[in-house]
Length: 77
Image (cartoon, rainbow, N blue to C red):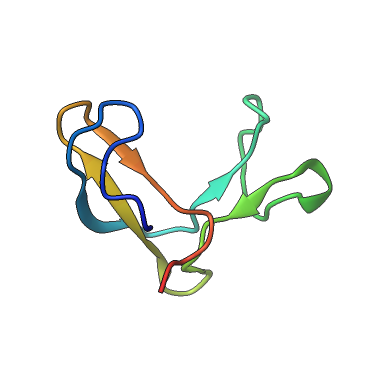
């Protein structure tokens, strides 16, 4: 994640990681309860670093002023 300042607040961002025991997925469907696999035909996707056996982890930036976590869709080098 290249941006080092918060796009909402303008303050500094802390570099870190988001981790989960399960895959981290994004969906626009608020009513979807069981999220086993992303439905690509509806635009769902897993965040970078998702692994069915080891859980998930992806790099992220945290804005402490707004308590906001920014997650990249693709891993930055």
